[in-house]
Length: 129
Ligand SMILES: [Cu+2]
Picture 1 (tube, rainbow, N blue to C red):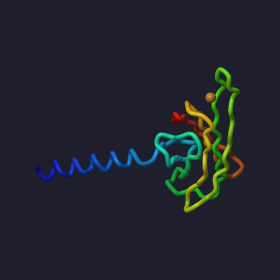
Picture 2: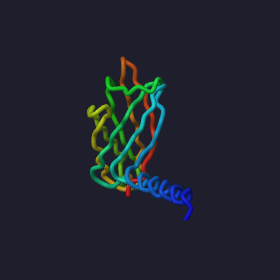
Picture 3: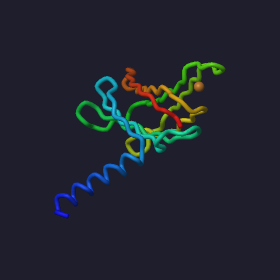
Picture 4: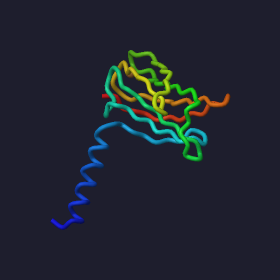
């Protein structure tokens, strides 16, 4: 193989490994950028570790915010709506906590960031296996 081909292959392989390791999603909340990582991919019933990294518009890590994750599943036949919340704790410049999904299926997740008396939020959904 030519060297270029080998390098390309290695890049593809390592990108694949990173993808498979953690669930990761990048979002905007107001003028903050938010990266959410979950330690299970796909997310599973029971405990899933979550880490939220927040940066301001200048790209500086935000460590003076309050971060909460709300996760909900709308009502289904035979099941009332389910709403949970987790307050994350700052650890090494990111906010960490655990989400505990009580059933498989689609969950809506809202990340709320309180800073300087103002709350911004962003939402996404995960399919719990
Ligand atoms: Cu349900």
